[in-house]
Image (cartoon, rainbow, N blue to C red; front, side):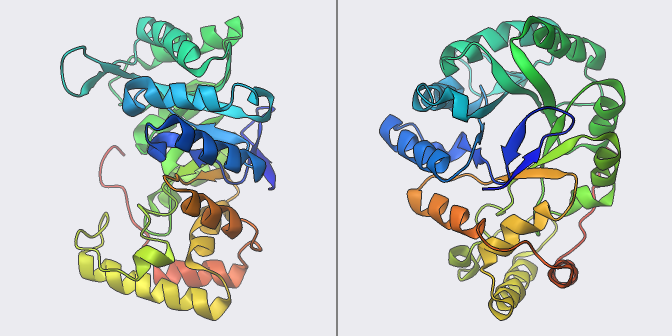
Length: 304
């Protein structure tokens, strides 16, 4: 599988990574999927301390224990669980980040993290303090690089201007083209890579889901608009010789700011379909133009 440089770092990530959130809590099952991904050439794994209250990090750590040198390992910080209470609260403070990283290292069974990401962020955060925490961890060799996971343009602009982030993880797909409005060009100019999460849009951009009716809609698509759009995309996929999954995974990668897409996989069949899709040829200029005509150029309405 081809690899791309992550920002200005010396990390070269596979064009498709594995989003580990949906692996579940069965260790054997999670290990099979992770090992199959690594065997297929995937080298980028993304988890977070939030997922299953740390269990996901533990499963990932156990699965890669004997293959750590094959993996570019990413995790996230910022959401603080309250013992005995449901949910979590946001904590981007320096003190919390410096404490939380120790727990992530322990759960992951490693002494360093390749990419440590702020798991969200608001414009009202103590941004300088947050940056200080990540810089200190870099200086100590605990993390190699850092980034943020955010879809908020105002937050992205602040970190792009004030920090040494190498990446921004954001939702980006054929059904969520909001990043194209402004932030992709900014990040390309700054040499900051995009990690595109949700490229399959909850599975809506796979043929299995495209053949079923969705009652919820998606972002600013009503259920009927979503159904019509998926039918048009399926028809184009068939006519162009691509699968719908190929179009979906390949589309975000057409922008030079995007380093990797990270679909999740809760079943081996999903991973296999995604890996096969990545063997397809890159989309042509004609494909890109057609897909943009068939979908909506969504806009951010908040956090501008």
